[in-house]
Image 1 (cartoon, rainbow, N blue to C red):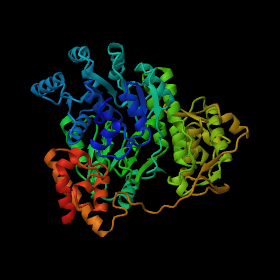
Image 2: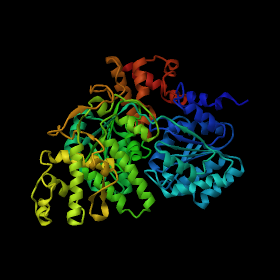
Image 3: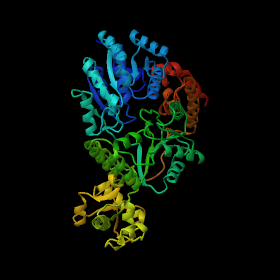
Length: 625
């Protein structure tokens, strides 16, 4: 019978300081600790790292050796190893940031059996030298577990495909006796199938947690003046709080960071075109300082463990729901209230379609990517609960959440059947008349009866559809176009300069076989019937974002004092503050006001090592506040 010190539950309490597992964690940990393979889908902030860290500790204590953790980012390795050291767990990484002597010292610790976890990137793992080291460890029976983090990177259907992950199938082929756990926060059914196939996980047990993040409020708005819309959002709801703003281009990232800073909102840019040292500096500042806003391309974010990001904003439409969900999931990892805010417009739709159509990828890939983009457009244009649609994409059923923009303020909808038929008729008449297709702007000019040079050049003022849409403004018409594209009734032909053409569902609409209700873009259009969509209740009252909610004046004073002390300790250790203690732990100390180490030991997040290292100081700071 094994000693209780290697039981997963004892490790959870003694090392990590948590009183109980969450969700599927215990099932996963027990299965993997016992030597089973697993595929784990768990949302960002759901506690994925514990699912391999606890088995790693348990199996190392049973004499089974080291756990190899496949991690894609140097910064992520550094912070995770630092966090394990704070817990008293021997861990290390091997990556290009180390000197030759530093790498050799890690290899010596590995050979001496002193490491519980070793973090490495897939590129290094696939080298002959590294595989030779694994062969030697395996021959001694000292390879305990392979943990493949960010497993969606193995799939061509995922949102962050990395070819180097494909070679990880050799771990199973070469070391079939060593259990494996693959983990990701986002993967639809197609991506899951690809992960299983590529990593040879057909026999692995699948653990799929709920994708719901109820603390995140989803809000999607029509883009008018995106920068000013973003500024109002931050100033009104998140002033002084940490956030991430995603943009599509590097230029836009840099311009936005500069502009926000000029508006007294501290902001830093991050994109792949920056020097590596500058990227690292900006990321370190974001992780370690409070209240910074990072403007970034999708190059930033994977593995960002900062728990107190209070908002994630998108100024451009992402490529698909997986990417959107992964990026928005970086908000509110601590369980506190957070916002996922996005501004999008017709130009975003056109740009994303163009990038898919112009890519050198195979037609099968393009078709899948178009379908994923269509799903995101449908989410954006929906008048019902955002969360219901988001979860349905991942195969999960849910009722209205009462906490998204559509639930809190149900948008007015209008009978857009006639307007849709006008747009589709115009597209058809123009192509029939000229033999070529035209873009959205020209179609709208014809509908609204604008006699531009281009209209007269092609004689389109003589079409029967010229001026039939004069009753609607450009904003409304652009909304109709977006929603027809989302429905698949209109397609964008990138090879013909982003022109519009009719698609399958257009026929039924033109024949009057379908009635279309669309969300009102800005104001109810003249002549259209309006109604309120259903989909949940709730109010738009302000939410307390941090863990200060529920603290009285004395508790708040203790909480602020503890955060200031933590910041000093974090600077001394060169670690993000949340690695020392998370806000939830400090808030619990401030709330309970423990007076001795025994009472402090009962606070969630206060493991044995942290109690020994910091317990007396925490009590001192709390008592003197």
